[in-house]
Length: 294
Image (cartoon, rainbow, N blue to C red; front, top):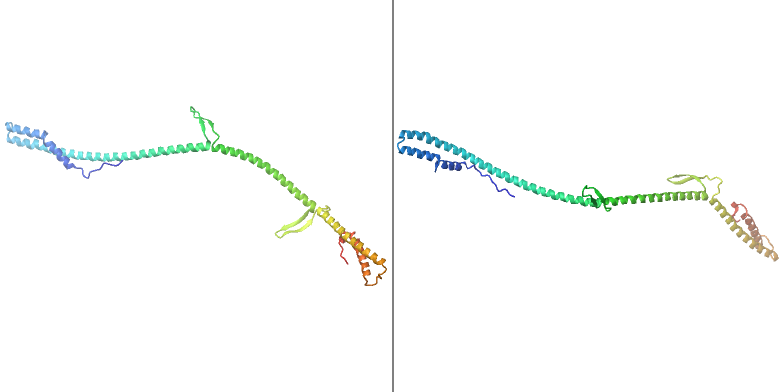
């Protein structure tokens, strides 16, 4: 809608004044009637020229003055009223424009409210699922188990169950860890005993055994290893003694060896004696289990 009204640049008083004067002095106006009455009285001798002059000066002059003054006042009021009507029409046009814009605004607001209502319905459906209402009281009678809130509740319930299972599993793992720690401690004590030590950035130092008379598995294994070493040494020297003694017996029985100094048979005899001494050492203490050959 556009503004079709405009305001003229002048009040146009002069044209209105001329129109009013012409209308007041012409035709069947009071002025014409007074003029015709005066002419009639003069024609039939009812008044003389002196009276005519007085009447013209008094009545006609006053009438003309009154007509011209009234016409000017009316012309001014007329122009003023027209101008006010024009301004009023412009004001009404502007009010119509404002009302049109307000109508567009209301329509946009209605559309926005409808959109918000649709979004609210979508959000309600998404969050809470489909609800059934009592048409009389408006109270909710049922709610479908398909909304986000319901699924979140299900998830929380499942997470609670999972937390219980995880707690049980954690307790089992703690017990398992305790058992494993106990096994490590027990194995360490059985295998190596107990020790005090100092640990710093350079590593472990100052290790001191604290298991007292407790015999550890490593001690037992060491003794077994020593005994095995003694057995291996015993067998070696026993075999060497048996072989060298047999050779020595053969040499004595042949009557060809004199066992003189530096002879081979004397050296064989010395070997038999060495083997016998080492065999004796192999059967004695652990420190002498693996003697050094002379």
